[in-house]
Length: 450
Image 1 (cartoon, helix red, strand yellow):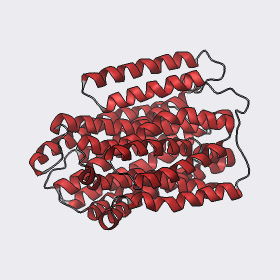
Image 2 (image 1 turned 60 degrees about the horizontal axis):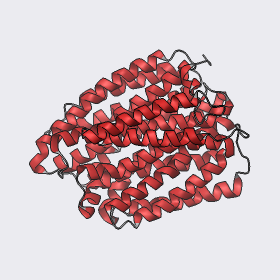
Image 3 (image 1 turned 30 degrees about the vertical axis):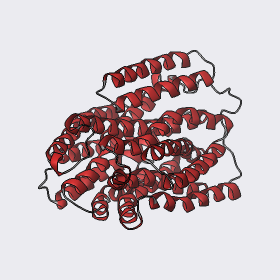
Image 4 (image 1 turned 90 degrees about the vertical axis):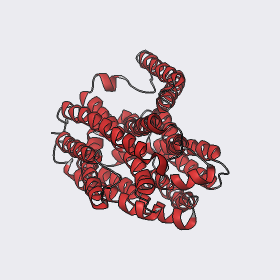
């Protein structure tokens, strides 16, 4: 029942994130949002998730992972209903931020609970099943999101998730009696948490608004705040984040860096290609979703296999091979034009999906197996933070380059050439970053289990 509840939430959260990308043109039309406004419907969710994950992960270690997991699902259910009733773009963006807090509670505890329940010899398999459910959510999101948007409107995406969330809430309330709080008795680090929240928010919000001067100042202030956070955490007895996990645990540090870069180079692919397929190639939301479903379907298939393999083989090799394949796919994406055929794009998405599936499960297994049980919540939160920060950076890079080429103007046939140039430039930047990520993945060293 524990695995069932975590699998459902691991499906719902990426579904909410990815399905919204297909609906962005419809949302933009209803609320008159420009390119930057559209991106914030996605980024508000990512920003709040990223900044709250670490504090909530630590709180889960102290108060109980089941308790935080339960509350997170309640917030997601309530915010989904409110998102569906949004009267304006500003309200929708604000509610997406609230939804992100619930997502942080769920993702900051789910993998930690699985790691607590399953022994090392079965952990990779369980994590593989969980990661597969993430990719099934991503797989169905473009297809179902396109159908729902086209026939029932974009609001139906949020209504659809509510019954699943209610089922998870009922399962936890009825069947899961055990609690996991390996750091019970530790004091919660409020000064560190507040410093982290404000610094991370300033950095990520500023990064997403570049190249404006005020955004540059805000991002720089955020980075200085994060430096102050690191210094503060080295001095307190019960830090919200144990910085020594990064300074003394090479496997943990480099695996997380590889995850950060991996998500930073892949998340905006769906965002950009959704716009490309609908605005440049003229596909309907349904047809665009049917094309984009290729990548997450391959992710789901390969992630389950690679999760099992990571119980028997060094995750470093599997994850690094995955990043190499992703790099090749990104190079191919940089050659897309207004005359590219759909079959070429489907092949590229399949390549990226295979690479991502090979990377994610083994990398997560390596991270969770590299720390003491007391730090499972914070390790799970760190994995989630790397994922969400990477996704936010990915959207930030894509939005920045879009803004450089077309400003805040709506994407149309008049500026299609500028959009294509911005898209190709973004993919080339991702190629460079992914190469760095491949080197980081190789530099982590061999897992302790091998």
